[in-house]
Length: 336
Length: 133
Ligand SMILES: Nc1ncnc2c1ncn2[C@@H]1O[C@H](COP(=O)(O)OP(=O)(O)OP(=O)(O)O)[C@@H](O)[C@H]1O
Ligand SMILES: [Mg+2]
Image 1: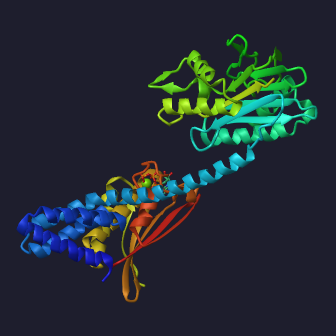
Image 2: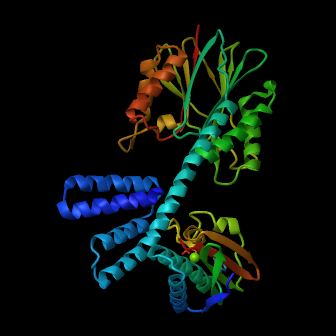
Image 3: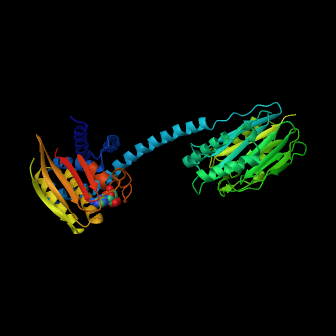
């Protein structure tokens, strides 16, 4: 006996028992029956038909009009059955898509991997966490032959798969620059041309590029419309904004970015971030920039990685463990 | 293989009902149960409505098919309209303009046991078979 026939038999028995006893226990079994039917992809029109056929046996002298009314009901159930089946297919597809995105996210992680340079003069820490599976933030380190360090932090306006694609492109463009070219202005000038040529309109990228000269502790930087970054002075405990004027990457073809410079003193902390940190939303309001700096200050006595981990944990909890935007925080602490 | 049982020209919306009527008659005669009759009628509606909406006119033909010991109903919907350009897109779930109701051509495919679609700029032909249980 095929399962639908045995279910049919089962349904008939349940129905006639119920009609005699009106027992709640039988209604509970009916509930189980409907769950099983869903598992077996039995559509509503079939259930109505099962009911109709069961009724014919249980109440053989059901009138002609009642009989016809069932044809009417079955007819109206057909579309529900189709919608239900389509829903099943779409659900399977969704599961498939989700696992594909998972694979892509892993690939992206491998692709965008960058090693945090270790250095006896500066301590660097970074935390980058995507809001969804794929990260639209990006950071990258490069060390030249004299031990100076280039640092990029970028944010694609937009999230998810398209943002991730865009980031991968930027990464390859960055890799094509030679180690001796890493001066912030030049890096942004050429990236701007790459993005302008290769990215569809409506996709914007902001980037902050810094170059830490480890010999004389000067930090050179340029910004393509990126969030302002900060330096926390060790001696005064004050934050200073480090920001330079510049359009987002890819907006206009021929742009020359401004380059600035700041003197880094012993114990100072440079803080680079994306708007996922500053635009962290809590209860529908954006938290104030001072609040962000306040938190950073609370962790500033730790080592660089300790700072970023601590700040991340704090905001993650503040947002009920659901990031609204990709979060990247990168700090550089001058050691001696 | 038996010949044509009946055929209905689709030109106006009203003809959709005529096609359903004819289809129900032949499916009753071939011994289909109530659920299958309702499914066949829904499939006919979808095909007839497409002809009505997207072409000047077309025709739905019903044939009896035999594959001993099975008996089945073959529905052929044919028109000389503009044709369907991207067949795979049309057969994808969630594509039809009604969106997410599971109807349209993929719905016809689900309702029937066999489904075939041919289309070019000279017209469209959908063939679908349902076997009586
Ligand atoms: N006979 C036909 N001739 C030309 N184009 C057709 C024909 N049948 C369908 N199409 C085209 O294929 C598309 C998909 O058809 P389908 O019946 O699957 O969905 P729909 O008609 O858009 O929406 P629904 O049927 O769910 O209301 C139609 O939008 C139409 O462009
Ligand atoms: Mg249609």
